[in-house]
Length: 159
Image: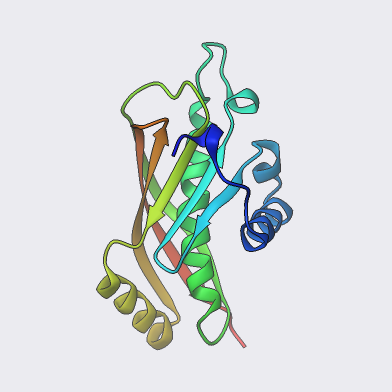
C-alpha cells in the first residue's frame, strides 16, 4: 500500500513511535513512525519533506537512519522479551542505493532466519555477547530503493 494511503496507526504502533522518538532524538527530527511491528518484522516510514536533499530526493543519511532503526527496533523488541538486560549496538553496516528515493519511504527489517536468532540468543545467554546480521529493505512507492545490511552486537548488562 502506498505510504500516503496508510491506515491510521494502532495505539501500539503510536507507542513504539513515541518510544523511539524519546530514546533517539534523531527519530523525531526525521519524522519517522512505526507502521508495522511483529515478532519477525518491523517497518518504519518517513516523509520526503524533512528528509530531502538539494536534489529533491531523500538525503542518504536519513534513509540509512530509518533502515538502521528498523533493524535495531526489531532486535531490541526481541531482546526485551528475554530474561536480563542487554545493550544493542551496530558494529558495521553497508547500504546499497538502487534508485533515487523521491517520495515518502519505508524500511522493513525482517528476521530472515529464526535459527540465526536462536544462535544469537544462545550465545548471549552463554557468553554475555552475541552478533547477528540484519537487513532492511527501503521501499519508495512500489519500488525497492535501497538495501541495508548491518551487524549488530548485543552485550549483556553486568550485575
